[in-house]
Image (cartoon, rainbow, N blue to C red; front, side, top):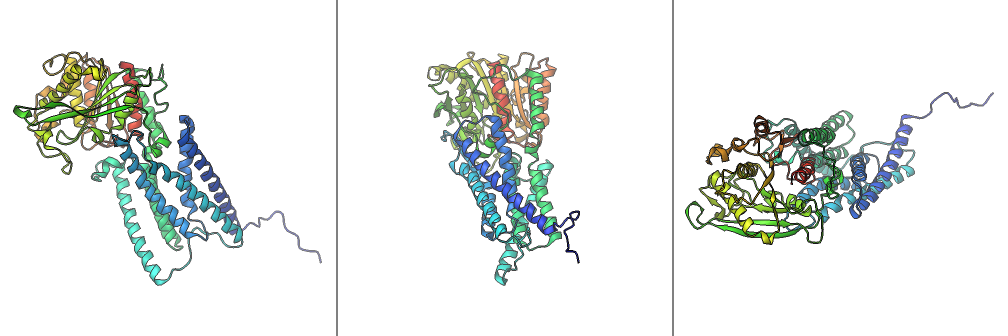
Length: 563
C-alpha cells in the first residue's frame, strides 16, 4: 500500500491560519510604524526638518494613530493596555487642541507651544509599540489558538452591569458625534458655540470618535451584526470629521487660483522667513512655534474726559521685530489689528488671536493690537467680561474715531517704535473686519482728515469675515459710509485680501463676496477673496489649522508684495 502524499495542487491554509498570518503581519507593521513615527517625531521636534519631510511624517503619523486603534481589537493577554491606549488617545484628542490653542492665544507664551500637548503624541506612539510587542508575543505563545478581533470572555455579574452602563454612556456619546458630524456637513444645522470649533479641530474630533467606537467594540462580546453596524456608524463619523483635512489639496488649489488671479504668482523672490508650504500636518498636531519678537503690553493711548468718551480708557499692545535680526521681510511696515466681538465685546490680546501678532512681528512688522470703545447694547456673547471703562453710547463713527486717535498717537510717538508709516496694513475679524475696512478706506479716501493723521499711507486691507453694514441690525448706528464701507470703495482703494468661511452663519458669505465685487464695479481689480470650505465664523482661532495657516501663507505674501 502506497503512503499518502500531500497534494501540491491543494491549499491547506485554513481561514484561521490565514487570519493568524495577517494578524502577525499587521502587528509587525504597526511595531515598525510606531517606532519610525516616534523617532521621526523626536527628530522633527528637535531639528529643523524640511516642510516636505514634515508632511510625510504627518501622513505616517496619522496612519499609525489610526492603525493603533485596529491593533487594540486583536487578541492578546493585556486588555488593560488596549483600554489604556484608547482612553489616552481620546483624552489626547481633547487636550492637544485645547492646550495648543491656549498656548497660541497666550500673549506671554513666547513659543506659542505646550510641552504637555507635544509630549502626548509620542507617548501614544510608545504605547503603540508596547501593545504591538505584547500582541506579537501572545500570538507566538498561542500559535494554535484562533485569532479573534474581540474579547470573548464572559464577565461576572457586577462587571457585566458596569460594562453595560459604560456602553450606554459611550453610545450616547457616539449619538452626539453623529449629530455633530451632520452639523459639519449642513450649515443650517446648529451645534451652538461648538460650530465655531468643529471645522478647524475636526481631525482631533474625528480621532476622538474613532477611539470611542473602538472602545465600544472592545467592551462588547462577539456580536457580528450589531458590531458591524456600530463600526460602520463610528467609521462614517470619523470620515466625515476628516473631510476638511482630506480636501486640503483641493482647498489649496482653489486658494492659489483665487490669489494669483488677482495679484499674480506667489513664488517670485520669496524671503526665506516665509512659510514654504501653506499647510503643515505636524504643525497642526504639535502647534506652530513662534520666532523671536518684542512685546510691550497695555500702553494707554487715550483717556476720555468729556462727552460720550467720559471715563473711556483705551490701550494697545505693541509687538515689535527682534533687534538682533536684520533684513526681515516686514522692514518695519505697520500692521494694525482690530479685534471683533459684535462691537459690544472683545479685546486685544488673546481675544484677538495673538499668535498672528507674534508671527508678523517676528517677520519684521511693527504690529499694534488696538482697543476701541464698545457699544452698550446687548452683548454679542453674554458671558464675555467687559470692563466699564470700555463701554459707552458709542456709534460706529465713534469707534472709527477712537482708532483714528490711535493713529495720531502713533505718529506723535513713533520714535519709540521706528515704524514705517508709509507702509500700513489694517486687519480685523468680524466687527473688527468691518472697522478695518472703514478705517483703511476712510484714510485712503482722504475725506476724513479730521480723524486720521495724514502721515499714514494704507497699503492694504486684510478683513476676515467682515461684518460690513450689519451694525445697524443690533441698534448701533453711524454714518452710512462707515457702517457699510463698500460705499467708500473706488478705483484707487488699497488692495484687499479677504478671508471668509463658506459655513459662516453669523456673517453671511455674501457680505464678503459683495465687498469683492464692489471693487470690480469700481474698476479696481485689487481684491481677492479666499473661501474656506466648511469654515464657520472665527474659524481662524486655531493658528496651525488648514484655514488660518493657509490664509497666513497668502497674507504674508500679500503684505510683502504691496508694502
